[in-house]
Every structure is written in structure tokens, then in C-alpha cells.
Length: 148
Image 1 (cartoon, rainbow, N blue to C red):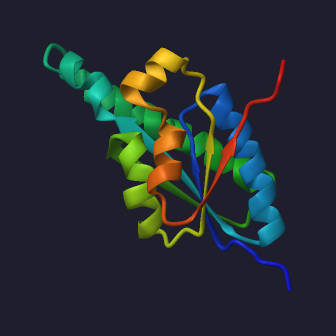
Image 2: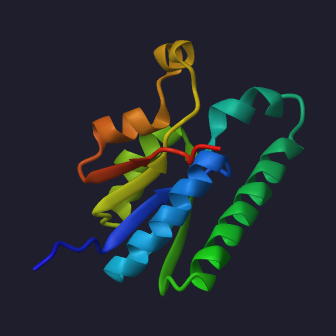
């Protein structure tokens, strides 16, 4: 008998890479009759400094994140995924996906897009997909974007 995944986390951030990974996640979830957990982590390091000057930034970021998740959820449901859950977290995407989101939902697969960072950027901050792969206790599929 073939192995099936039951609970799949797809990490999305609105980028082309995550969108391509999302499309693959839909196919995998449908083939496995799995629950698709669409996760977005608001990287609080990005807007925390700005928020010191403009308190409304947090509200706008939260609303944008919820809208992003809603859009992905509608796309998944329209594509025929029967069980869709959205998960919004705050913190570092590198840490949250593998250490919090996947265990919380008892995921057996994490799917994420490969990042477009260059070698210098990866050296200083490391890629999200690299950290997820390193710290995840379950299978990870890193999806490379389509060639133009």
C-alpha cells in the first residue's frame, strides 16, 4: 500500500515561489485526500521598528495577512481540496513553521517555496526553507519556482 500524507502545511507569503509551491500543495493534498493547512507567519522583525513611529502598521499587516490567507483558502477550496485550515502566526517564519505550526496541526508534510535570496543574504540571515528543512521533525518538500 502506498504511503499517504494526512495533514499538509503549506507556508505562503504571497511571493511567486510560495504561489508555485501552493499549487503543488493543492495537487498533493487532493491526491492524498489530506487536510491542507495554509500557514502565513507575519515576520514581526520586519515591521516592529516602523511600528514605533506608526501604531497603525500592526493593524494593516494583520488585515493584509488575513486577506492573503482568505484568498489562498478560496483558491484551495475552488480547486477541490475538501479540508482547508488557515493558520496565522506572528514571529520568525524560520522558527514558527517547523517548531510551532506543524506540531500544532500534527502535520506529516511541510511544503514551502525555495527562496530567491542570493548567497550573501543566505549567509547572513539564512533561508526560511533551509531552516524548515533543518528543524522539521516531518517530511519537507521545498519547491523550486518554474523557469520563466
